[in-house]
Length: 468
Figure 1 (cartoon, rainbow, N blue to C red):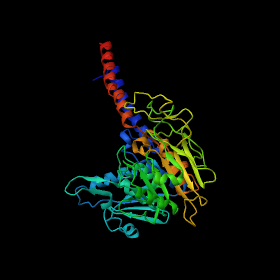
Figure 2: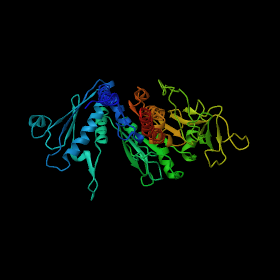
Figure 3: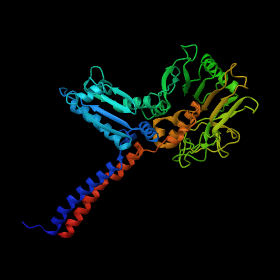
């Protein structure tokens, strides 16, 4: 049976397309490229993990991962091995500092004895002379009374790698008794990615209830107050102030005016919502911050990246040069901005400045306060304390990190200032080498992709009719 020209072209086209796809896959593997089109990149390596792997590369260290296969008699052994293999492949594609291999507990007895492995499914991490073992039961979580098993391997590996790279621990406490935002929430409005940035500083995070405790724990390196739903009680403010006078550090995100806490620091929370001419996506309540390159905190900050807040507030700074309070406005209100004091229900109603009700002037949106011994705040023999103030914590949320990479960049530099690191952490942030698409972008992309098959089918019908 002879083939006409169209049939011959079709037969040649199919292997050509398959060959092109195979060649593209090989190139992506060779250059460690991968694409995750899911919302919030949930099927790719997290930004926090990428930062840890980037740190490995900067230190010129290698991470070797030896994964022992699951027990063969288990019904879900293949599934467990596949989950683990997918993760290890992602890590190896993300960084050339990662190498991995599978081992069998029964066949590789000498290797298992050398690594002191006695259980199936164990994963061994080696960085230099340091070795960590992770048991199978820590990689998979099964809820009581349910059949499904959840793989949490990336989170566990991330924690162990962090423990190896940053062995010195800071204890960070976050208030949790007044409706504060949780650092353990992985949703779009949660702060779990900011949580990861804090842990990358070598910190362990614990909840703290100052309604039940009469003082901040002595081992605290930092206390975080993330947007209480109501103003903190006076006794809680006094306990935080006592912690500061003893040389403590506080990250404070709230729009309320805490006179008991703020008065000694000569700060006042101003009434009104910040309006700036530069906004994200045209929403008036999402101002792009005017960053001040002060105290070298923003050294090497990428000026093409914007830091975006959402419906935030501002602070008036009243300390003089002789007060012993060094107030640093890392982000301030621009000359064209103001505080809107009228109630605006809809984002479509663009506010305008009204002299009779609104406020203009010099104000800080993100303010660092270095408390020095010459102030009347610190106790005797205490050398310094630090307080970081901002009007809201929403700019630290997972959703805002996805929309504006500069937010994570800026947050890490502020953490670096709080922990007094010499090397500014801002230089370590890396844009992912994956294609990141947020949920709204993905929705718009679907409308562009769905008609494509219909379009090509229509072209095929036209070509068929023309040949007829």
